Image 1 (spheres, rainbow, N blue to C red):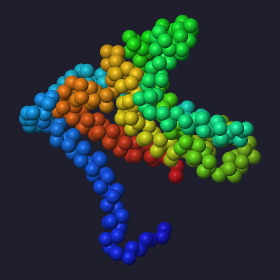
Image 2 (image 1 turned 135 degrees about the vertical axis):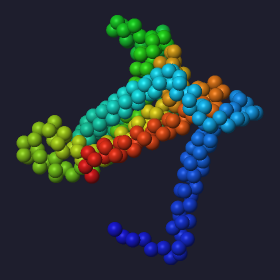
Image 3 (image 1 turned 180 degrees about the horizontal axis):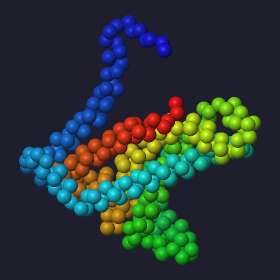
Image 4 (image 1 turned 90 degrees about the vertical axis):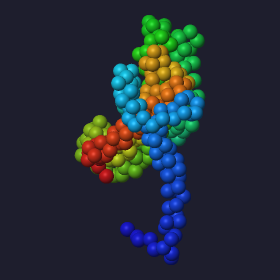
Length: 292
């Protein structure tokens, strides 16, 4: 490794300053404000404030509705992460093979990533709208009593499908780059030894893709926890009967719409701790199985 030598001692600190400023202003400062506000009890207009210690946390953790939202978030995150990773890996393996028009095929698979989450939510809501959606009509023709406006399971399935579709392109790009980095000579040597395509994939290709898969697993869980807010808001607004209300949407609903600023701040702190803890567990246990 080549060691960098700076002509002045202050130069490395000056180069790091913009990045440190961005992290401090846009991450640590809002996070510290959320922690501070979680100990306060404010009226909806912020005219009166009282320091209440952990009262917001106690009140929040005493609500059965909050645990239902946690369970919904777990199901939603697991389904979105598993589905988007699996489908993206399958598409990347297919796109990595030599084929006519392969560049067009790969470009079309990347396009959905450019669609804004709220726009993606509106598109899927229209397609599966019970009385107007063309795909909802197809489901009814198949005998499915499709109605995400009233059926919570249907609504959750629809939100999971839209969120998965939105994330597949991102995962596809990384898997495709990971596949391109695998030496062809290794795969060809296994083929010469008589290994079938399925065996070559699970014993050679997938282990060599494990760093990419591990990185995408962390990114997808963070995406499911935070970045799906626009899709949920545009499609269901957390309904029906809060069947699609995840933790991040509940933070918005209780803080912005309900005016419970202290309770909303407490929820955001708990959500932040959960995501940090989940990421730490992934690095602690799953990273051991990654082959670098």
